[in-house]
Length: 372
Image (tube, helix red, strand yellow):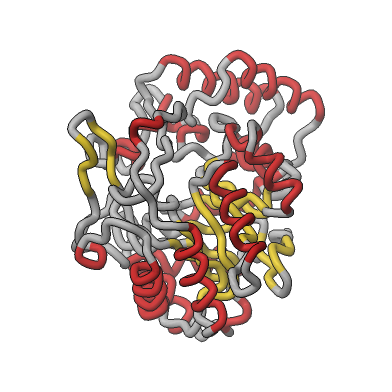
């Protein structure tokens, strides 16, 4: 069955499954990336997500390879540009908050930008266009709204959810960011604008500012984490998105593979599984998806039992749960192997009964959002 489409914006229909490319150039070679992209495209996926910092774990010598693999595939396969939807994200320096202050990462991107100002937005767009080998980007997303940058807005994320006002720094204005994005839209470099890892305040701020100036683009989507283990979107973001007609692009629907159950096998899962392969080297993933956390384990085991009880593949349960959400336009997933990709494709046709949803909600009530 072909993957169904969703109308994300005028003249922009995206498949309800989106293939993320953050493993391309690290866990997947160019030829492996091409095979995954071929299989996804043949199955009806037209939506592909990347970022200038990818692949992960981020390193100076691999930065940008994911976009390069995606761009090479579109060119070498001679795929008409209007048959694929290319989404990417900028990345200013990310900071982790410590007692002594912010410590920078990814200093190799544009010589270490400390903010997402107009110049950095323009440079990010131009460089992504070159790596993607395209004249335009369908959906350009602000990766994390400068929340970790020393001159910008702070927001807790990746396992942290309590806001600490003492961590706030003076910020680049939303007006400056939207003005730069508006120029990119007017010049034809990008078609639509989205946010990522955002909060209700951030979404409403961008919308409020855009309404005041006709040349500022309106945000059409927000790419936030959403899965059986992370339903924080439903707390406040869902209301904002519903009333403002903004769609959720749900990333990490399998919780970095945890919901497949592979890490709970007797041998701890495959050695090349991401949380095993990069153990101790991927702080963002390990802080959110902590395998030593007993609450995470209890929640996952509960969902695995539900899948087993109803004869479902755990991947199918996880993906079907995300896709049933009325605000989800597409679920962004990753795969390093063809059989993993096929499991997700098969899940697209699964519908969860009211009984299954009730049991899922009971697990959630017992162990709410263990991976925020």
